[in-house]
Amino acid sequence: MTFFDSKVSKFSINDTADLPRDLSAYLTEVRGLPGPRLLNEVTALGDSGAKFIPGLEDVTVNLRGLFDDTVTAGPDAVLGPLRTNTTAVSFEYGPEGTAVGDVKYSGTCWVSLYELRSRVGNLIEWLATLQVEGTVTRGAY
Image (cartoon, rainbow, N blue to C red; front, top):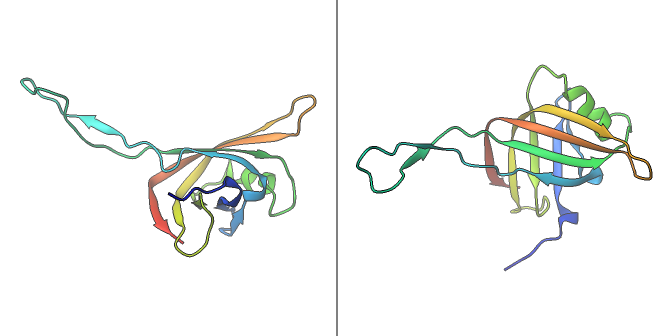
């Protein structure tokens, strides 16, 4: 079994100009991928156990990171405008990196939350929630 250090993980999201922006250097956490599989119960009277059929995907991705306002490339410059963007944008996540053959999760999303957090004695952090539109695709780089 091979294990991977999260320092090689990569996460990018397209900005409002549809250019991919790598936020990996600012991220401290990525949660929610590939996401839950919703199941609809179809158990009928007389069944001896519960029965289900696949339902719609409803995936949210939660990001946490360190604030940086670098023009065009920093998370504030990318995520701030995406919070009010009028179209969904693409994202890619490589938990083990982006070498040929590495696992990649991708899809289209909306930024439904972008929040800054300031506390005494700490770095300024941000949180973002991405609402996936459609389904998450599992592939390879």
